[in-house]
Image (tube, rainbow, N blue to C red; front, side, top):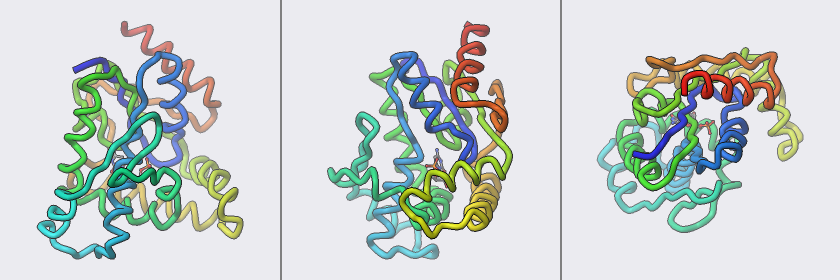
Length: 218
Ligand code: DC
């Protein structure tokens, strides 16, 4: 395995933006694991798969599904769906289907495979605990509910002008609850993970803090 800088954290903690910039600074390749979960959920959504659909049906679908990630773009069955996965509907579906072990098993191999040839910076919910527990460096980024909801609101309002801040806040609280309480791969602070609360920090300040930590433990 090459070097892995693994970052976990809840939605809106800035981990995607931060991981991308950290990858640029270190020269490592960026892997957004949430994009893989979103692409998988989009496939299931397109096929009208419901929450109570049995695992074996989902497994059969996923055995015939190709998901790949290249240069910040995510591909579903060779189609670039990078923009299509960023909607509130896909947000919700992804949170629901990412708690299924058949979905997580399917993506585990894709994620680990990605690090076999590249030094990577990756972010998600179980990067530091399940996918890369032996990562070279491990971080958990977080921020208050309200700060995270406001960040998400500012991102989404560009494309969805009728979106309401209160709805986003409720969505975030609901998703956090689902992501951290699920029985498989819950979002949590793992062993040897450095926690950074960036509610009051800019993106640049957060990255600097991470680089300082990386330097300090080198
Ligand atoms: O980071 P994001 O908002 O793009 O993630 C979308 C969803 O995917 C979120 O509900 C949690 C889930 N996810 C996960 O369960 N495990 C990961 N490693 C990454 C994302």
